[in-house]
View 1 (cartoon, rainbow, N blue to C red):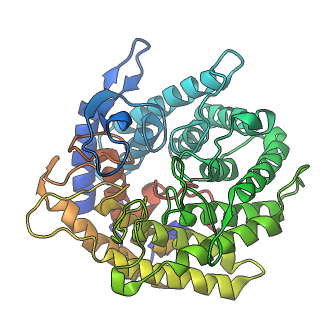
View 2: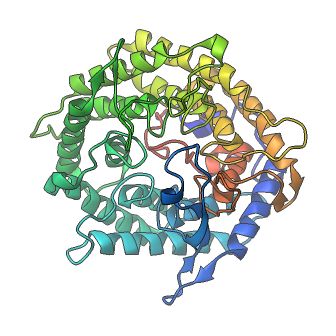
Length: 462
């Protein structure tokens, strides 16, 4: 069942009716559009605050705030903003300029990414899901489908093919760590979900197999299951962005894709290997759950503090479980793995209940480590368990009212997910991600979730 058909049972507002979620999303997008500037080629560009990573090597250091142009990425730049504009353009009372601006923004991101991967581009051109060509291509495909742009769809497929072939042709350029964000699992998720021309499908199968084998080679045995050292660290962590949940999700999808591919891979990496590694990752992360201590620990910190973020904690575990459930429910292991995914989600929902604003104090609203990540966990559950879709959407909306009612329209008092308190228009830590989540609270069919590494590509059909 698709997410859209699941939504038909939730009592969501019809397209012609407004809601507080649509209204808040439109206010944020109006603000987002006002921040755009045109570059020398007439394409929209954005800038935002961020922290200088050199000034904050760990969570104990005070970061230095910097301001600069956004890249073209899905989570970090223009491709994600194009997705937000596209979603907002489908809300009741939307500005007529948002749909063409979404297409123009996606076209600009695709054009630059394709140039970087072309014969005269950067040798190490970024290809990952969060900031690179695979995520840009997938976002542009979604925008193209929403607005009927055949030209953008074709350019997206071309870019996807360039990125997938880069994996096969230049494996020496792949990152030496398995993280979903910035690592092999993220590239794997992008390779699985990107739209390709038929001539590139054999390269997709070879890329998936190669990446599964690389991820397997980096795994370490834990007391239970297997784990992977986080990038820049010598130990594993819990969560979607850099931990076992994200790696398990990518591997689960790889097992399904390899098992059903009409293009058998020519190298190492098999469906059985991918499924086994995914199960081992889930076992390790499950072994760390402690309900009495608040769920799963944030292993980046010396003290056993519970992780309460999409990137490092319970909401990310819940997102992974919701996305894995439909994949494993139809596999050979079926009932056992599906039940385990459901248990993980129930635990994540309970732990995420602690991620609530207290009083009138400012709180983090972002997708990455704020309240929008919790909302998306519930929204994605509506697609994973259609029989309970109404309940999950209602719970998402109940949490989302903390975002819609904080401050005044277009000027919320919640903070972006930047440690030193800056503002960003992007999807990962900025107002773009919150706007997209609120638009989805109004109507799930306006766009897939940016919390989903496959951006809706693996939604079951029916």
